Image (cartoon, rainbow, N blue to C red; front, side, top):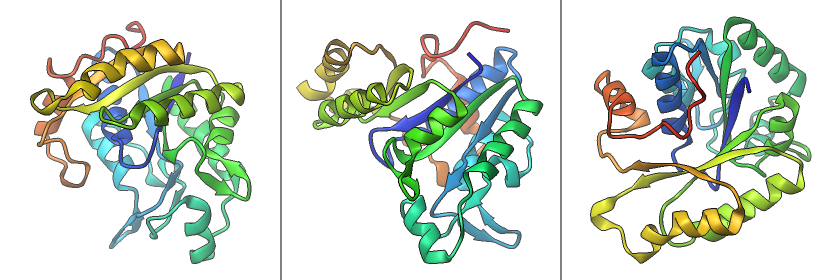
Length: 239
């Protein structure tokens, strides 16, 4: 195993926080880890052009220094599915460009975390979906899911589609679990998802108001590698 493709049951489920936390912990365990956000929509305009906030956050948390051009080869401003954002902006997405960037990162790192955009069926170009990208990069997927009502349906659909495409599923991570507000759905969903999908729930990440991709601060590193998050089931053995 040389990495994970991190997908979600929807957009905004916390894939970036999961990617950053995994990257930071892998580095702490001695791995030479790299991160990639092949397609970023809703990119932020800066004096140096469009920047992938998701990729920047993960790199900052894990103290990774790679060129943005290969970490996130396609950075599009409209906050839409990559296919639509590229059509609106007139940008032609070339899958080979993504593949070449990934290979360059693999030459620099021994273990890669690739974060998708939105869910597994989000269109990239024509009928080429995020699932196709995971298959192209030959990475097992980690599925990030919400804790609340509705997540059983969303997660099982994601699992079944991944299986139908022949994608290896490494596990499911429940993100943003708020113990103080958890009701019967939140408390029973992880076990129910694991039972019905046959895929292990490898981690439950607690809610934390201070974790915010848009307002990175060094203190967030401590939270992501500290005892508040149990990454043991997710991480491979130390190198």
